[in-house]
Length: 159
Length: 444
Image (cartoon, rainbow over all chains, first blue to last red; front, side, top):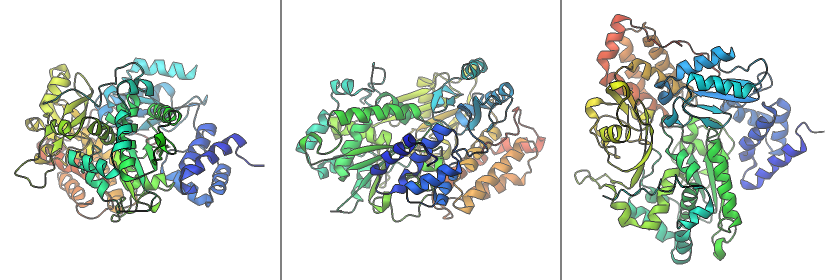
């Protein structure tokens, strides 16, 4: 009995013919598991390694390099909210915006609200500088985030 | 000078991202013609003769890069599209991919035909989720229309384009970091040589090109070299190494301006024209203190340097690292350069991949020192220590594998050289930054 569902395994397998090496499927596989489970457990790492003819340590090595994938002790909430802090946003109030989110959600960057709905993160430039300060809701941009818009966003995400 | 936009010509049209509309505007007709009438060598020659230089930051001549591939290689040869666009303040590629993906895809098809590649890996940063989904739909449309896959339009040319998502790491924009990441490893840049054209993805010859560069290829093939060379700045006759700055360029404008945005402008506009004509000036009747001409790594231009043309040569003449991505960020005269520099150092310390000790430690030290300055605890010798660290990290001093830390050091050196009085004054008076969050808990 495998840990990963049949659907997830099939999604991962579908990537294998795209590349001349199975190791290249590491990132796609990690994304598939991470999107579904909101973290990548040890069991998943072992099964991905088995599917890709790798040692689990190789998958873990790649996974931890990016500091993007969460592990069992620190899973993502329902929505991952990234607040950009790089220069274009910084010049237009990103520090205060991030503080505002921290105050309202009563968490620090990297933490998840008690109800499990929002994980707050800071981000380095997310490439939407024309709408600074900006945020990412999982992987979709929202631009020109005033404190008022931030409050609306929190309402929307905690509904 | 021709100023009719091509790269952004379609972005405000309804359904600009759809194949049908793109074809109605003449899309893929040139590709079909080239497939029938021209050889791969013809395409390489045309792109080489056009004078197109890469839009990703280094400005390397695109056609010349393609000629570095080994002759008569049995294959496979790969094209990697660098859509990792992570240089802070840069977003032109995102707009191209979201609003007019087919001109990028057509450029990929020309490039793959030219370099005889049957597989293109489109490496796109994770943060561009919207662009990723738009591109996936556009690629699906091309397979349905028989423009991708085996024996395209009955020719001998076959091509697959695969999207590959990153996971939030700046270093993946470095071409060999990108290749390592694609291969499923840590994105640690490789020692060069061998360059990717000889040994790249999966140890095979590989060309890595930027998104805007490939979009330019589409228009060069469609409109010809005379058109391309009628735009921009010809080579400086006094500089035999200058390849010129031909063609249209997407300029991004962010920071302290009344209007931010991305515009297609012939290469060579000055920073002042860009800020005044397109950005409509600085808000609150303030003045420009400094700008960054093309992403953080390029360093700073002062107010008195704003008449510098933003072509491949201009920023270098005033001590910047180069044109970079032509993403201009404006900093007004009420902003502390210490806060700006601290923000920049924070970025590089976070994004150093950790492979080379001088970069990993050097970016960390520069952050610690700028943090000390920001807290009003700076010492006079800190400025010299900063410059010393910045001078010793990078491929130019020869201490690192990739250029990340050259880019990390450049704004530090520029800031202290061009704004030394402000730094010294802050140290002397023990002035603290007035930003609320002096400590920021790290998520990672």
